[in-house]
Image (cartoon, rainbow, N blue to C red):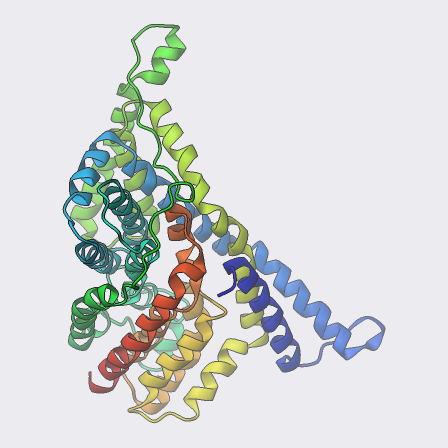
Length: 444
């Protein structure tokens, strides 16, 4: 398994090469058609690095990670983690706890699930090491990474939530074809989806336990980031500025104001969460739990060490996304499967096409933007439910996380692991879960 950055560079070269072969000719300097195509393609690739939506999404993900770890560094959260990590007495119990927690929280909210599962797995590893209980630490990381296994079938799934909005980038096409907003009862809350999620929630935790190797690789304190140090209360002396730095009043008042917004938002919108709402919640909750502005600032500063992979790789995936859209590569991939489809098999083939596209576009929203329109047109032509096709693409994207390591970057940074430490186990999960999801689309 190559390093995730080496992988994104390889995917960049492959996408550019495929795009150059498949895109139509364009005039270039000196009349060279190939040179013109190459210049136009490189221009579009570079535009992807500055895509405002890509950069916005990247910062949102960074905030999810650092604010989540800052909450875990607060005194109340430390006490809660200490209680929770003391529960498992054996390696098998630890793996069951982490994996079950990850699947459930990932279904509820993928960002919170990913970060909190990584923190739980890390501290469970520390707790077991302190008690002399051997556990395979990379497998704990795999259990935490299963938070991404059901996320696109859960409450924060990108494509189903987008299809449930009145205005989106495919709404005009749906209206022209006699359709409209696709309710969540046809996607996330469809019976076949809930049954598939329940089956995997029962199947995956014992499967993770069964993958324990005979020789465990234990937690290495030198490689695993230490949690942010707890803030030590200081005497209320010094200059007014120093007392202001150490007061709890500022963080508590501002934090409570933000949480009051959350209360009103939930009352008006229910648990229709988005990244901005989650980030505000994490920020405000973290401030109320820390004893001072300086304490919270220190926790945030230490938490940023886990996001370097996102900062480095997100612009490259933005470039790949633009190449896929500009050259029509994603549409061509979709049409390969559409041409072989019938009304019964289209959702299944949408699932397979999405798994393939996942290699180049790891973001669920990004993949739906480039692959959703042709799949929905095919659904209209064949008389297939828009909701079923949407879930076919969603299933492929979430299952693709088990071989595409991009979304493991926050977890790897928090746990001090490498992609190759967990991806072998994740590939086993990929192979086991694929037929379950495929059957759900066929029989649902």
